[in-house]
Structure formats: structure tokens, C-alpha cells
Amino acid sequence: MFLAACGILAVILTPTIPGLGAQLLVLLAAATATELLMPLVRSWRGVAWVSLSLLVIYSWAYPGSTDHVWIFGVQGFLVGLLIVIRLLGFVSVMYLLLLSTGPLAIIRWAGDVNEDLGIMVSLTLSVLPVMKQQMDTTIQAQQARGMAMGGNLVRKMRVYLAVLIPVIVKSLVRAYGMAVLLHVRGYGSSRRVKPQRKVTSGAVACYAGGVLWIVAVAATRLVLR
Image (tube, rainbow, N blue to C red; front, side, top):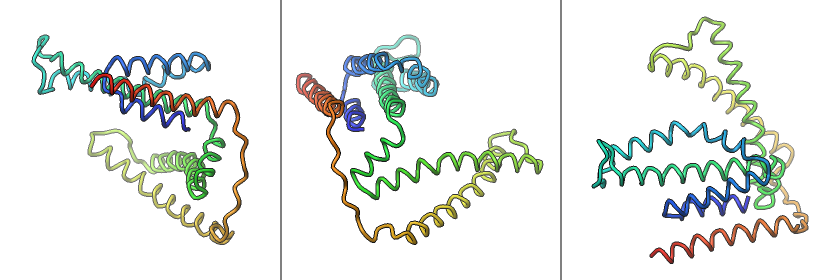
């Protein structure tokens, strides 16, 4: 989690395309070392159309472009490319985190930071599959009643609104019941003593790698000024 946070911060602070490209290559190398390269590359498909749209829009509409190739500006293309590489960096960092770190490890880390945060993360991760199942069940029930999922944009918005309202209402009822259950069990009445965890060599390597990552980006920004 610390390394992922440092990676997100480094991607935000990096102002140049070569710097972001170098970090993206490092992430690809890390994915290759952990045998996660192909799943990571496949995760880019979800942002492929967004990335292409950003490149086209910035190349065509960026007001600071002075050099043009047909109707597309070179400076706008470079600005769009910077944003696309940064987006791929965000996706890569988060995807590597989710693939390399299990839900229990994330919940344990959040609980070590703050007990309430740990409970929130745990409940969120447990509720998401339930909400997805409830969404599928509601869609099937509405279709069984004769509701058509197709049509124009306005009709689709009405259809999904009819599906979302029951899901949201049931989620609120479930959340209220969970809050009552936590209160009945005495949550918050007393705080447990956190057990001392041993610092492993892997954790030290992650902390050191994250710090070095941020230091390298900060040094690069100072040099480019």
C-alpha cells in the first residue's frame, strides 16, 4: 500500500513524457518479474478508448498548438500524450496493487492505520459483490416484467434509474442493519490494543523503494527547473 501510494504520487509529480515513460517501463518490468505482465496489459483495454479520445481531442482542440499536421496540433498531441501516459501509470499502479495484494492484507493494513478505517474497508469489500448480485437480480426481475433494456439514450436512462433505485434502497437498509448489529455487539465502546507486527525484509524493501521513487522524481523536478 505504501509503495502504491508513492507510485501514485510520483506519477502525479512527474511533469515530462520521458519521465512518465520511464516509470511506466519500470512498472512493466515489475509486472514481468511477478508474472503479471499479460493481465496488466489486458487491463489497459478498459482505458484504450478514453486514451485515444484524449489524444484526438487535445490534438484537435488544444489552444496552445502552433505547429499543425492537417487539423491536428503537435503541441496538443504532446499534452494529450502526457495525460494518457499518466493515466496508464495510475491504472498500472492500482492494478498491480490489486493483483499482488489480497483483500485481507488490505483490510489488515487499513486496520493498523485506523480501526474505523479497517471496518469501513472491510464492509466496502464485502458489500460490493452483494450489490452486484442485487443489481443482476433486479435487472432479471425487471426484464421478466417486460422491461426492455434497449432504446435511445433517454429510455436507457429511465431503465437504469428504475433498476438503481431498488438497489440503492436495499443497500441503505442493509447498511442500517449492519450499523445496528455493530452497535449491539459493542463496537466503539472499547478499543483493543493493536498487536505489534514484525517488520519483514519485504516490507523494508517496499518502504525503501517508495522513498527512493519519490526522491528520484523530486530530484528530476529540481534538475528540470
